[in-house]
Length: 154
Image (tube, rainbow, N blue to C red; front, side, top):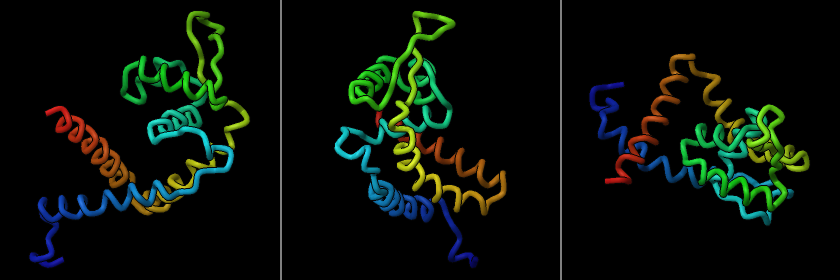
């Protein structure tokens, strides 16, 4: 790379500003499995479903911690998805006051299919990188999310 082609901060910002809308657009075009079409699912639901699919059944508090939102927000989403039959809620055997949330068995395969397009693309890209490079990518994405949140509040 010549000095004139150096990836300056300004050049990197420009590249990312031009790239991000295309990434989001392409991610939105990933096909939604037939079993999930017609359900009122938003991107916020995908993150919740991904945690349940990858981590297994969780409490509302655990989901709120992972999603970094208020438990009331998660409770509303869980209620909505439960009414649609996508999630189940059961008493926690260890503490009957708590509810354990899980993906309903009839939707597990469809959710895996929905996640698979993004997972395959990330696997293809990240597998070619070293562990340190992967850690840098993840850290940068998290920092970007935090910075967006900070700037949205100002």
